Image 1: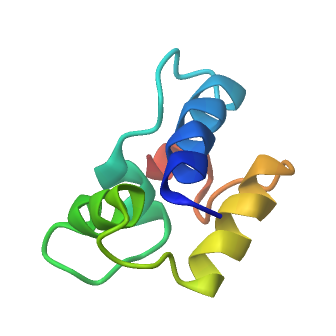
Image 2: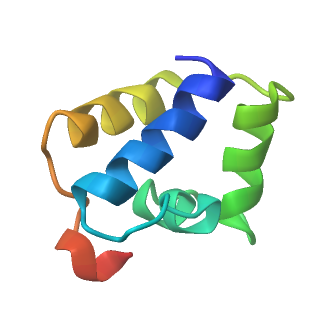
Amino acid sequence: MTGPDLTAARATLGQMWGLGRAVKKSELGRILRLGSRDPGESVSDWESGKTRIPGPAIVAVQMMLAGALPPGGLSSI
């Protein structure tokens, strides 16, 4: 998965989940339980190519694209 793929995945997930917008970077970071102070910053770094997207994050996003809901359901967004 590349940075542009992840950007597209956020848009697709937002549509799948009825948000009417892309899932925000900070929301995806929280869904993935990123431990940094600003979880959206890691997602931004991945999308820009600054850092590689970790394998577990790729798997989680792919599972959500296949229909899995985030931990805690959509109320966790």
